[in-house]
Image (cartoon, rainbow, N blue to C red; front, side):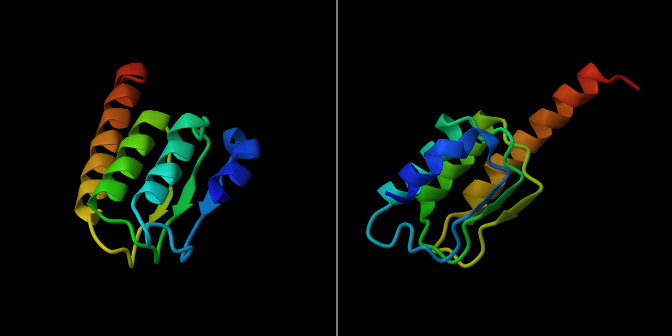
Length: 111
């Protein structure tokens, strides 16, 4: 339901704040819906993502991390604090994605 309301303007979305929404409290499928929103709706313009204070576990964190990597989002801010766990997986995937972006940037803009 929440992700359906966001889908209308997701392509232009620069800030997504879903802090303390209870995402993942019942099941990680809701975390995967958020991940699907990021990846599937062209959130490449996304700069700020706040998912703090929710219940993302390992699989929810992994789904968001993979979606961020695939979407091409160029985040400036990511708040994943106060979640139930799995932040290390998300951090690892995001770091890997940033490293890949840096490699592409250096190839297209040689010094």
